[in-house]
Image (cartoon, rainbow, N blue to C red):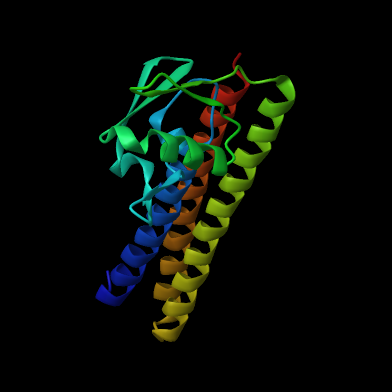
Length: 184
């Protein structure tokens, strides 16, 4: 196969893989009923006047499926961490016992599950858009390469097969996440 065609296919696959990994990261942040340290990944804490990610000033653990504990490395950071969690507006109510912050994760209501499912669907649609734009870019690059028509058609078919493969992966990830969200 033509080196130029292979290069275009490889770069398209790389772009599609990026869309897929972005989707996986977005799904980690979507709460599915059980506690996960990733739920606090968006929390910023004022650390000596600088907004700092929570994970850089404290240990975050999950002692059980419904509880998160945040243990600051410096005791004087407890009130700042509590403020940061409240400001992040995640719907959590942190409690502090002097040594660490305990966050109870309430069970999801049916309405909230549907909302989260819609958010997951929107994220998966964004990933599909990313995959399709990688296909569009690859086809544009192939046309610009001025290849013989039969080679061009073959290459476009390979790009379409690649696209179909990644769209199927996105659909699979979404169905797994939706099942996880809707399971009580």
